[in-house]
Image (cartoon, rainbow, N blue to C red):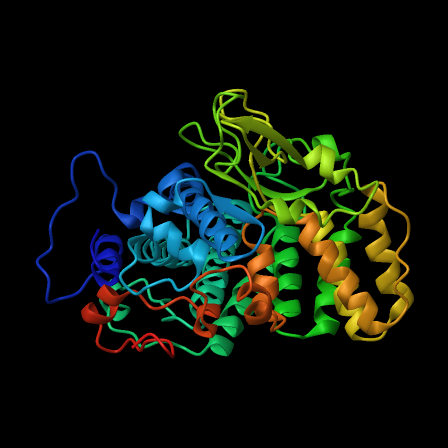
Length: 451
């Protein structure tokens, strides 16, 4: 793998020109960027490429694996023989960790570069059908915002690579976390304005307006802008151009679920984020801590619907059973990126913070009741926030690192994780900037404690 500046250069040179470079004709089987964004079909192919395995889908797997191992719900079976992942599970991720460099830095910036090129090409095009151009631009802005969201939360401020000219991004310094969030909000609002509420295709597998609104609700919650978190979660929950509803637990992660706001198709046989092996009797790579299983309340149907057990060699492994398939061949499970239950919990937490107690209780109860539980007994702001945090832990376990990010954003990571991770130190609430990237770009600065 090459450094970020080389990656962006490779992706960007074909989409830009510079008098200092020799002009080289396109390969016989390729199109120029101008030609790509001149026709609906080729422009669509270029944007849909951001959903593919080596772009977004590959990032999703590692966003999940690394962030879940950083938390206190998922562990890795082979961590003792895989030092890179052991660092996530035990704490104290190092600057030379290749999983960190490639899968949390390289691939996200790869998609950002794709989005930059698409935004530039689409904006300049004058020959696309208007509705197609808006859809593709909206998807591109969403993809850029989505990956900046994870970069920002893993590293705490990253270079804001927005220019389609690769060389202009190659030596950027880090922007502040607040500035990255500001760009994410701008991109998501732009996407929401451009995109329709209805979906392209029969499944919820391409970005629509409500996906942008759902991610905006999460961003505002993370930033403690509770009024806007309520506003955008309500837009999704109350959508009328598409109907979302809390599904039966058995079908929540089916690709036809009405709960799904956004899902991405799986590639190369993966369907369950490593939580389910291809053979039903094979131990999965990633499984739940036994202590996590004790967190379920009596009568919580999620315990039986979304977890199960496998005994091997006298050891009981508690599996994540949200996804049922070990391979993607059956074709009825996609990676769920955004779903309605999170929006209820976002609105519940934001309303609790705003002292809208009854509104917070109602949204919390919607999630609890779907799980077979009675209404919450929490009746004060502090008790509700505690109850909502617990509900998020049980509802969203194993999904794209929600537990880890919740611990960090609420300031609980050190107190909770220092008790369960053998080499945990407080600096671990941020990932280090990969050492090789700092060597390659002298304008990058390291996070505190990693020098």
